[in-house]
Length: 622
Image 1 (cartoon, rainbow, N blue to C red):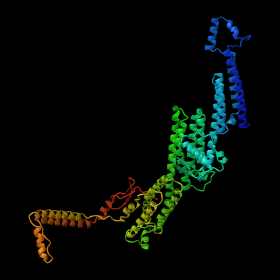
Image 2 (image 1 turned 90 degrees about the vertical axis):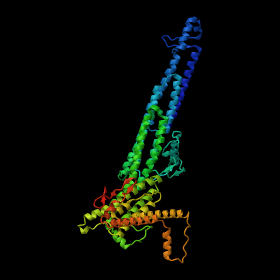
Image 3 (image 1 turned 45 degrees about the horizontal axis):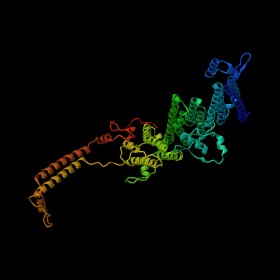
């Protein structure tokens, strides 16, 4: 028998039983109001109202007190109670026979059965004055069996969907989007429509969106993620309809969320999709970006799912929701691993695909073949095959991710990639040179070596700088303060743009001259009170008169100061020349280079007091 036919039959059964119970209740009320008391005894008798009047008033009063205040059961009341119990028992037996069939119905059909049986139960309890515990327990067992069977089918369906998932973007129907909107606005259980594929097929002309929207943020999602949201919404509706099962449904929701998280991690990060039913050829950046979007959307709706379940739980059981908080942390860890995977992809390309090409690069030869202008180069310059390969692969990844990831994730991912490139590029170049120098006794295996000429050093640093400028010009990324050029400058002992330093002796002489000018001005002002200020000497005067005129008006103290300053300047000049002729000048300069810092931590490459030779500290080999 189909569910609809069964519901028609049970509705007629409820109607007939309730009609009989109402008739029995009416008879019982009439007998009680009219004073008829029916007793089932040996030789059943009936006492009428007229006969009871002949009984003495004292005994009548005692009987009335026993019949009204104590409400001694009469035959009519017992008949009503027995009829109600029999009706509840009969309905319970019918429901037990349909237990397996009812566990396979959908949510809307289960709601219909629950509402009809619960309404009948309440009317039976009202008629009999007793709780129909048997019928209530049977009805609750039917709902529990439905929830358990639904959860099992959901788990298997989600596993099958994930295994066959090709991790390509799918459209979002208007019905699913409206369900997400209701969930985020706290109205997840107000809709009576079924969340499933049948709804999307009923309305073939409904609008579809390319992205799912949660709290104003758009996410590009896959089919299995939408299926997960549909299952969670179904469990929320069950918790609202069957509040006695809300505690069980918290665990069901947690199991679904954990299954999606763990299974997607194995399929994408663990490359399980290559061996699964999807048979993907490889896992690329597009697949990873879609996983990031799906994880982000589920994380965004988790607080709303938690609030919807909390509304159906008693306050003492709110501690069950701590499991959902743990799941949120697990999703955050999954997202972090996916973002780091982008860096690992670039790292694999750089270290295994591009690093072997360094052996063919000679920056000294490149500087001679393509000389650069002596002045500062501002525009882009052609880079070597290694640096050009790094630039090209990062641009390709940017093309893929820019179309799939939001701006926040784009900035996060490329900040990590830039930090990796900033640290790894100079480390790979230096380690390649060190490896080549270790094999210098094998001329057949000539490898890469750091440039020896100033032109080659300048060429190498400018090419690295050009690569970093191109990377910072990518759209939607946060500009990174690259320090690779500074590391190479220290390693090569070459400054691309030397800083102009002020000589100490020049500073002393300028200070002395300023003091002399100040003292001359003060003395002239003093003399100006009693004597005239010297006027401009005519051009016809000789040079000797000019000198005499100046000497006469110059105070003696200033002359002494000028003599002392000239002596100090001569001493300072002598000391400077001695320092310039010192043979340990190179060592002193190399020790005074500042330690480069990146994001608050010291760079991996630093120069120590090692006989003037640079040393690589904590360098990772290519």
